Length: 485
Image (cartoon, rainbow, N blue to C red; front, side, top):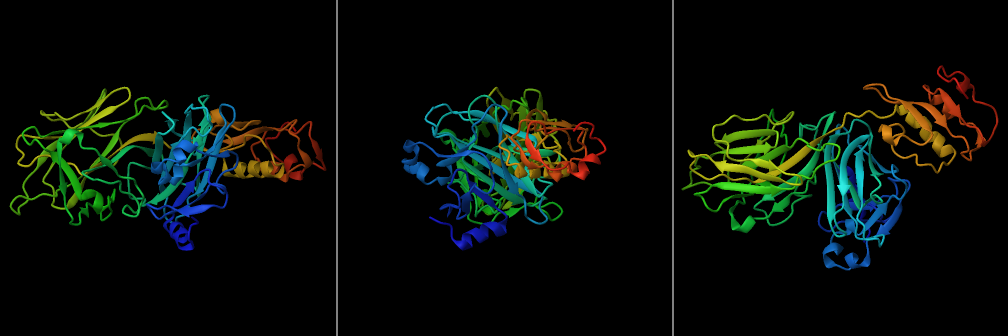
């Protein structure tokens, strides 16, 4: 089905970019669930190969309703090779975005060897993608500030199979949302759950297209609380910091056994090879949905987060009826709360974290509850890329000579992925500069590009053993740092 004009315009006006990777060029469609238009990745990517997952997955009715995972783009090549998408961040007044990448291997190559590879947001490491089995859907999501007019998402071969991607989505956020995400720190999603809900919630119910996943009731240990009334959002300085949809907050859970009043939640917090012990930044959402005899009764309970070497706790209560209370830290890591009765914990293990956030304290009248929660791990987004003038110059040179090199992503950063034939300088907290270009034996023909003269920090330029003609551009002889041509 082709996307209608109205749907495409709707997606553009909302600032959403929705890419079905591997979809045939110039193809598009409207997703049945969200009514958002998805398009081919042809206009966002260079090298790569398109595939469909194997027939056994295409034929399953469950996957037919999830079109984005039925096709993919893979990036074959040697270790260290990148495949990068360039996404325009074109919403005026917005610099904070949610970026979501989805992966399903589906044995597309017939090897039955799910790969492991790295994912980068621009020049900053995002996470390692570890595909556990052919039909497993892996979702990587990050909230980050994008200071430029575009952002690159790159997949890097790490000697453990060919990187691939099924879909890529960009969603603009209000700059006031998620204050923990700033110019130097991004938030990688570990989990986003809606307690008491029966169905997944995303766009259009969530205007930012966050995906709220129902959390399964373990052995009927919880009682679900429901309301059809609108739940208001807590605001700070007249600006909501998280802006959770009312429909998410209209469900909650509390202990079925009110004499025990303990709630615990297993929560997968997969390790990260660059940040082996990442900090956890939780955000808990609570809204009072119950009254007793028409009167709101008092609640008081403890939320505690514990890991092997750190802990944090919050004592909360006196909730407003049908108003969302957000429990989090707006900056930095959670600060421990000192309490003589700290009974609820998050227990870290090698591959999992047990979330036990809520226990009633003795003086409470009503049992504890929870409506929704998000858990993030922070990543550094402070990495600086190559000087924009150098990027423009070397990109123009690549285009002029139609180079088939692995010149993808940022030319100089990260340092271990610098483009073949380039050397760069790496000043602290400033953009990298290209200092050396070796294009000998490159099969170049025609004249010498004047764009070489725009590499103002270049010291060495080797164009030997090519079929170049014409004179040396005047600008090259005027470069202050060039010592060898």
